[in-house]
Amino acid sequence: MFLPMILIVVVFYFLLIRPQRRKDKKVKDMLANLKVGDRITTIGGIYGTIRALREDTITLAVGKDNVEMMFARWAIRGVEEVSIENEGELLN
Image 1: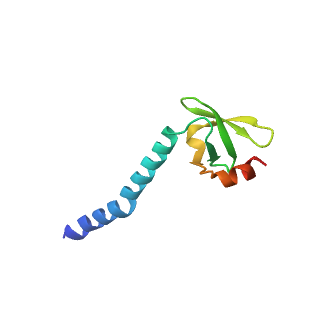
Image 2: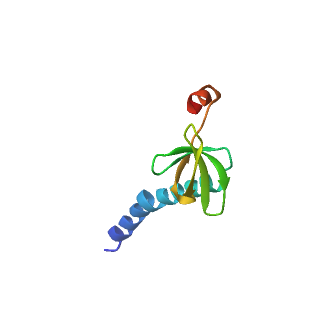
Image 3: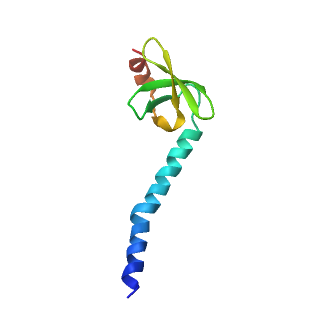
């Protein structure tokens, strides 16, 4: 009688909870390892280079004119992996 219910809880854990915890840990590690000079993308789709880091905020240089914008750390989607060949294209 309780076996199907226990089975549902176990399946729920392995299909939903565990993968979400892994994803949360990966995002937390990424935010903790940000450094000045990293190229990042925000959740709003803005690309920029980190100019300054504070506890809860990040200052980005955006565009050709290097306009500085301030964002909350939680608004960072990811760090761009820039290869040497593509670096010139990103600056233009």
